[in-house]
Length: 451
Image 1 (cartoon, rainbow, N blue to C red):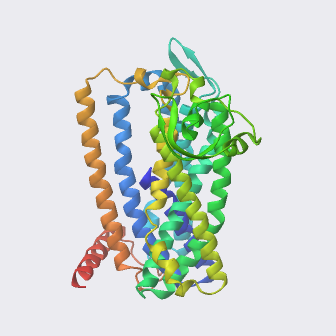
Image 2: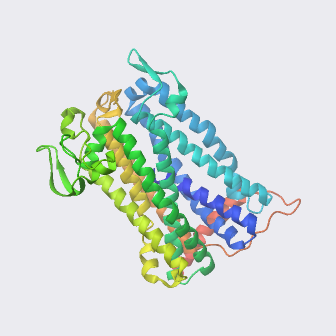
Image 3: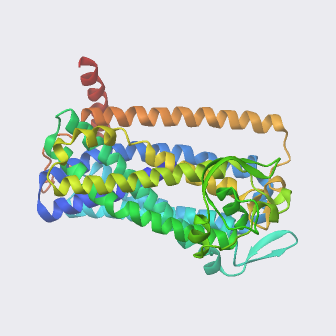
């Protein structure tokens, strides 16, 4: 989810920059849009490469899953391709290569359409995944799920919360990356006007979106408590359902002793958050058979990492907005220096959230319908281990290459070349843009080497 989330956020940011340029005529917005489009292109390509693995795994490692729920999951994935991927592919070429080859209104429109397309892609991905958590609108016949009501399938009980939570996470993560890049330039006294624009826009986004994410996350948690109480019990490290729920700040859930060791907790606070009553009670892990309990460490610590980073983002937005209001932001190196190092935290929070929700769903691959143990293909452990090892290697290579080239583009910085809309009769040579982009990347590496 790392690269798709970043693609969703950067496409929206590029569309915003081009709309601002179209409205104001300020060249800095156009320059920044071109700069971030290069980064978006790398991220989008890496996301496509990493996502291909999923399709193969349906047939290799999870054939029973495909057999039982393929009638539901298959069309949802197909809708993503038909409505989102085709839309993105149609206008992506114009967005990437149309800077001086199409009228400005068409280029701005293409960027907006790509941003909408990535959001639609997220819609279908989250719909399919949410259905696996809160299945609805289907019936079982001879052990196979058959669709009954597609509206209930698509808009299943957890989908609105999960989709909103994920989209905000994508936009917030991108805002933090933009803030880090702008702060990096300000600290190095490079690209002053562009850096100030990035930092100003990022701080404005973070100060609004980060608190909103906390509100949406709370609503998502209440929905999860209703439909997947065992997951909430694992996240909270809560064992005894007859007692109020303490807010466990830190501890080590111990499945063998059925207690949380070394726990530091605030009594009753989670009861207040989850039930809105000081003495409210929820099901504890002891209320579920051992075979129905999720693994404990991953959701417990993943949830805390995600929340801690979210609190840090809220503080960053508030402090940054205060410094901006006081006109001290550009000189506040004590703020810019840590901000320049924050770029990975959004991705860490996204991965922590996904680990929390997916491991917390276990032992079910489709909650209450199909257990994970019953969804795997009838193949040997060795085959699975080898394929998993190969996937890990591929992902590491893809991720490393993506970070390497994005960092090279960031080192090169926004291109100061002023681009003009195409003149009447100018030939269209879209393939030349690919060479220009690669030349820019290589030139950036050469310039970095000379430094």
